[in-house]
Image (cartoon, rainbow, N blue to C red; front, side, top):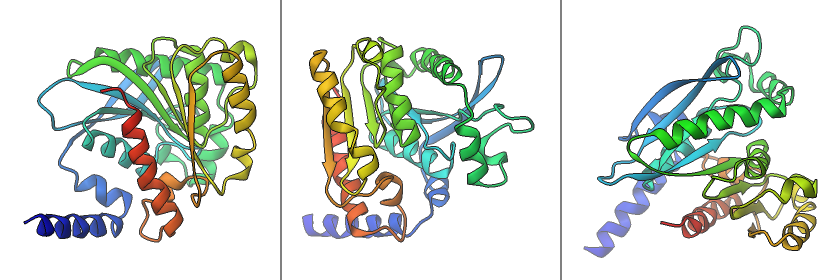
Amino acid sequence: MKSLFTILGLVFSMLAFSQTDLQVLERSPRHQEWVELQSNGRALHSFVVYPEVSENAKVFIVIHENRGLNDWARRFADELAEKGFIAIAPDLLSNASEGISKTSDFENSDAARTAIYNLDQDQVMTDLDSVFDYARSIAAGTGEVSVIGFCWGGSQSFRYATHNQDLEAAFVFYGIAPEAMEDLVKIEVPVYGFYGGKDARVNATISETEENMNSLGKNYTYSIYENGGHGFMRSGAQPDASPGNKTARAKAWEDLLSRIQF
């Protein structure tokens, strides 16, 4: 019987890797919904996924990469819900450009990326505050909220930890820390980093971040996945994923779950 379950698990895993991000989302049994929050005088669209559990669940704010809230970012939110957490993924490009309501309104991902780097950083923090307030108000939640982000979103996760001392933790995937010590000193929560071994640009910043965080007595723990590239959580989930990115993604999931305080 055990071998049968093992075989079935492998089959389901292979099927998942053969699907696009949108197909995975569409076939998910979990409840998904869009909510419209108000922030900085505009509508902030956010994608929410609920786990299939009987008890209240911790909440994660999922911050997307520099291409906006695409199908993969929503897929990751759904995968977090599969693990037993409520996930809320705000579209930080919501109504931030004329004629653009959501990321999906941009003509291509390059246009979304340009818009991301034109965002006002104070606006991003205020948007995340609005999402945080909503996350804590969810009746099915425990009131405990963490932030997790990728690439540009990873950097924003680190930055948000300097801004909001009421977080449970910040999970930073291949993002860069703020450089100013006067920002880092404000961090009151654990920060966990996840980096690809083949990401020299980001990894060149790790030693300074570690030194700064240690000198301030802050909790900063990180892992480097030897054959993972930048963006391995997204790339490793795709049908054409390299073995290195697949392995990095699988190990990072294990480490992520082990660092969440249940």
